[in-house]
Length: 114
Image 1 (cartoon, helix red, strand yellow):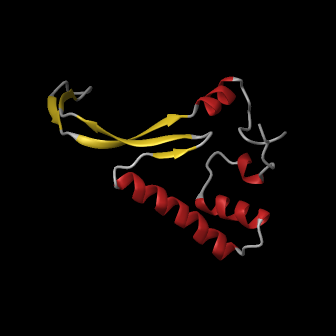
Image 2: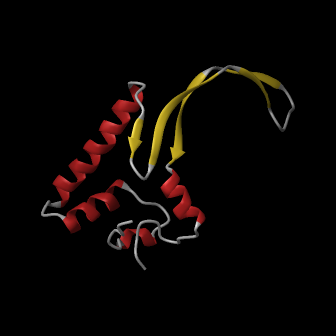
């Protein structure tokens, strides 16, 4: 499998849109504003597809789908009072087998060389 270039932002606990834009800028000729637009466009495209109830499959990464949760009775753990939890849609993510294997093989920096 092809290894990607090491990215400095992977030292962070949280990776933000800004980190992604800086990474795109670093490896392309785009300025930071255009790189930020690219990140926003990708995220908007993913979001629009998910909101349209379409599956979003990113090869070697995973699959995003909408799952319908039925209404159910829940219980407040502090007061033990029962309450109805309404039906809702949630976003479900299923990790790709190749990514799952990499995670389970204890690779510290997924997708990066050391």
